[in-house]
Length: 141
Image (tube, rainbow, N blue to C red; front, side):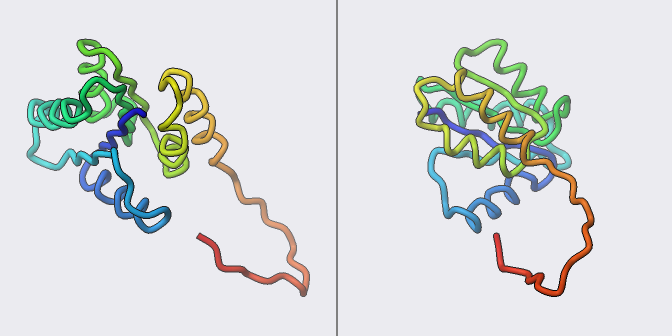
């Protein structure tokens, strides 16, 4: 089982945590690391290292808000010096849900492609259509 570390600018990680709790309940083996104003990259890297150390020798998947942003680039820097770290940027809720679904896979490397595909496939465009008189709105997630 790999560990998931969600990070992003501002309260992104905390908001993701609350959203996931609402959708699927509290999840174990996921850390949420915010990158708030006034926080430097050294402090962010320390928080990342703490999270990784709690995970012992298992693989770690960083899911960050913006590819190229500080949370992403700091995780990438760590991945260059430590083994068993994978970093994805530009994540969305379906990406995170897929990562949770694939956590028990034999290898994170094998799961990453499927996780990325879930995120891509979740992006759709609404196309207007004329509604007939029988159209009903149903409750959903």
